[in-house]
Image 1 (cartoon, rainbow, N blue to C red):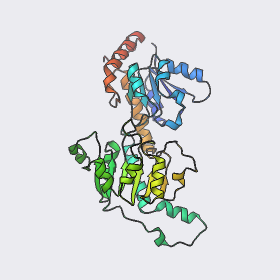
Image 2: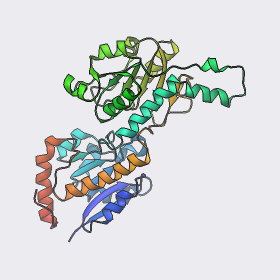
Image 3: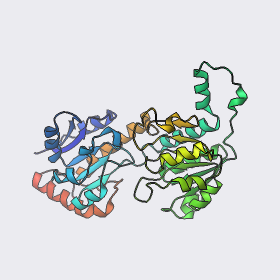
Length: 352
């Protein structure tokens, strides 16, 4: 009996993924090299039913992103599985046209990202990054009062997006006795309240928040959302946090807002280019705490991503509708393609 083929490139995954696939006698997990023999990699991809792709755009050359050109060369492909909650490396519309399911691991790193966002807030409020840099210098002409910080308690936190990550941030913020408000066009006020925040308009959020933290997806509606006008609308002296995706905020506009004194600081985990160059103005700015898209990179989150990814793909190949299907509108077509492939390949799948 011909085995089902699952292909992935040689980016790091928690070993639990490979261990889980090894338990399935009818599935071959094939690891491809990102650099080297492109012909061999494409040949394997062209015969695979599932492509497990990294969600991080900096880890994979664009020729291997799941877009129109690559999909046209992969006629057997039924599913593209992103390794994280995001899917920047996947053209969902192209997958829709090709009748390919797109799945992610939404929620796998929600707690990790939320903790990181709160860490950035604490770092800014207590000026931890500034203090660290001062202590590493030879200059000792400063006093402790030069690094006087602020408590988070009593501050108003504005969440732009209150999905899985945003609601975890809301929980943590409430433990610090912060007022939490949120703007999310995908949720009604009751749902936002159930997730631990007061629903407000984006304009009200910008005007009222001492801290604005982004937790929205990167898509056509959010690209460039935080531009010069939005930073200008924020409270003077507010902090800006993003653990969402690069491109949602305008980096040049944010830098200018910091230089002008409009904003008191920023905590950034995501960038237009990842990693950002060491001489990037925001990286070098003393009021910015920088990290390299590591908010969701914890042992627990990576374990869940790998385990959930394997389980979801195994279930899909057995005929089950994936629990984290990004494009549910294409499922009837995918199910029909999967059933036909099952029949022609002689797979012993459950009925769909």
